[in-house]
Structures are given as C-alpha cells and as structure tokens.
Image (cartoon, rainbow, N blue to C red; front, top):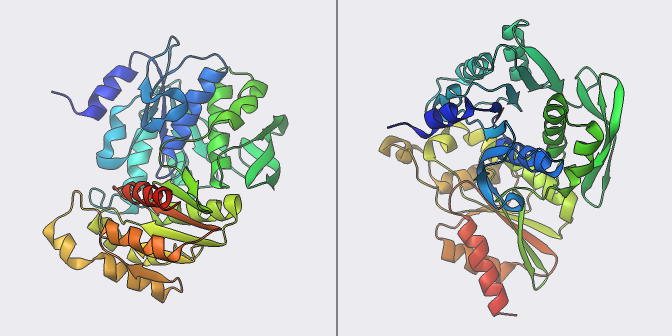
Length: 372
C-alpha cells in the first residue's frame, strides 16, 4: 500500500519529471505548462491538482518522455519526487498544522530542490526572499534559472501593459529578447506563472517564439478566477483562494479584469487552525472588496481545540475592524438570500475558498435564472 505522493514519485522516476511547487500557483502553472507543451507538440504526461478544462481532466498520459506534476508541500509530500526540473514559484508560511514555522517550510523546499536529479535544473522565483534562502543553501550544487520582474533574474518581462484587464509584455532571458506574449488569465501574479512556464519550456528545448505564441490560449484551471455566469447584469465568479496572499491577488485581479460597480466576496475560511494562525493577515486581505460575506468555516483536519479558538463570526469582526464591510452569514441558503436581496446590475460576486463554497455560486445562479 502506497500513499499518493509515494506512487507519484515512483511514476515520475520513469520519465523526465517536471515538478511545480510553491505556496501559491501550483495548479495554474502546472496545468498551463502541460497545456502549453501539448500546444507546441510536446505530448507531456501530467498530474495537476485541479481540473484543466482544456485538457479534459486533471491528469493524462502522453507520448513524450516528459511528466509534469504539481508538487504539494503539505505533509512534505513533494519530497517523494525526484524531478529533472524542480520549479519553485514562491514560499510562504502555510500548513502550520504540519510545519513548525516558516523556517521549517523553507527547509522542506530546500530538501525538495536537493531531490532534483544531480544533472537537473531548478527554475525559481528570483524575487522571493524565502526562495533566495533555498538557492543560497544549494550553493551551486544544481543549475538554477530564475524568473521575476527584475532584470537580475534570468527570465523577466519588459513593457508590461494592461489591455482590457489582461496583460501584455515582452520576455527577455539574460538580456536577450525572446519575444512578446499576452495572457488570457487575469492578474499580475499570472505574469510570474507565465514566466515560469516559459523558463521550463525553453530549457527543455522548446523554441521561445513557440511557447510565447500559445500562452494566451490558456484559459485557466478549475476554480481559479473561474467565470460561472452572468445573469440579470450580475457577474458570478468562483475562486480557490484560501490564503491571505491569494485572496489579495484574486480580488485585485477581479477589479482589473471586470471593473465591477460593487465587488462582493463570499469567503469560506478553510480550516479553523489556518484561520487562527493567519487571523490578522486574513482580516487585512479583503480591502479590494466592497463587502465580505463569511459563512461557517470549512472543517477539515482540525481538532476540537482549534474549533474552540476561532469561528467565522470572529473573522468577520476582524475584517470589519480593518475597514471592510463584513458580515457573518452562517448557512449557504441564507447567503444566497442575502445576495438575491442586495445585488443588482453591474455588481460582481465571487465565491472564494478551498471548501464547498462553490455551491453558493451554483445556487445563486440557479435562482437568478429562475427569477429572470
């Protein structure tokens, strides 16, 4: 009997593995990479932590020797992988139910990077302070390509501009212009994800013009700033963000893309322990929203002690204290009642969280359609 991550590692050993890690963006970047490689003729095998609609599933087999996999740090599961290319998007404190502190998390990412094949490659965010600690500890024992917004990185963008909520920019590597590209997925954070995809693809032999030419075809993965529908002038999105950094990035991206009259966020916190560990950061992460609705916290992997130390009403109160209108509305049906009563043409609502809050988006859209 093998755990999932153990089996994934054994499977990867039969291929040239490309493992995409990071606190944020793993699913989007690994799905984008698998899709992009297939678009340019590299039929990669892939396992992603979310459905990639354009690939028809979250996993699939291909005819090439490459295997793209999302590498999750929870429970140190990514230490089972020994990839040819290890990609590190970013490192932040998370999963403090199984890590001692942020330093412990950085050490796990270092062990992951060390697990790459001796002749392999590390593709890493060159502007992330914690990733820099990993690179420093590697001390030249692996070849490293960095990406980021600064020219000190190996792969970086120039002439970044926004057109109708989507980014366009030129891509450079070590001072040489590779070409220009544009993105269909919103948010400045997705420029970094696109740079990671480009860096990996170019370093396995894909022509830069080819991969840059298909980046804009990618429409994203399931539950990442996903447009669920528009009805009666109200736009409904669904998003997986469940960490303060992700919430801020998603809300900012929504503002840039949709320019709503009012932006409402129905946020279902994921885990009582995570909510308690990051309560201050969560409270300050909703400033781009006009209103936050907070239903009950999604219960998973929590102890009774954790449940006694924080609740959704406390979170709503802390958000209000940071200047954002927030209200605790426990049950999903009551949340939909509130949305029906309050939202109108020009408004946008996003359901957000790693639990089952997507049900609110579905039910609210069903009601909107019925009231048309």
